[in-house]
Length: 225
Image 1: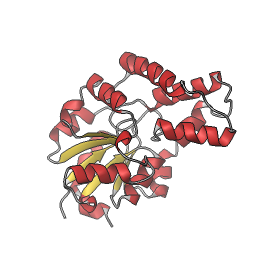
Image 2: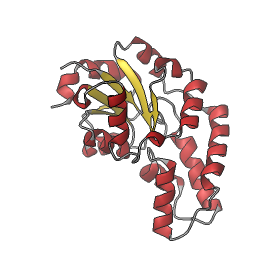
Image 3: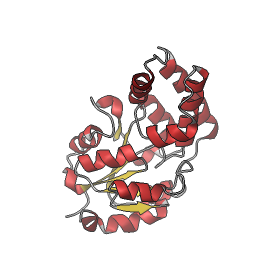
């Protein structure tokens, strides 16, 4: 059974942006009086989650509104940081250029943030128009909707796709979509024990660097075992 499609998350897999984005979330929440969401908690709980779902969770847990302008304020600060400091994950560009398989991006980020991140790091050319945001589906990760949407758009059967994900929500979404998942721990946001956490959640294998991914994909049928 050949691999038909490689589906890549963006933040924390292609670009080293999770710490930047989660830091802004934590700082903005603290500024608005939500003290129970320090950076470590935001990284652990909300990495890979769409901003609308983060807001819904915080408001449900606290019984308070974060403010109608919260998402826009965070987006503006994150955009500034991405333009100033964003870097691709080491090896991503070279490996993506060499992999002889169709590729797409399926991310919880907004379309604007995705375009900015992939353009800023020079990775956009590897995916063409096949860049999909959770804004396109009703339910974001950990629901399988986005991965299934991407596979359907490219005519790939879910069982012939493989996902590269760094977050618990992303691993859960891939498994719910019936796709094997490579747990990626090469981002600066990944704490000690993150590989074990992703493996425990069901990641088929773990990659600590992009250079490990070609060999893992070469053994694709075994990832489904």
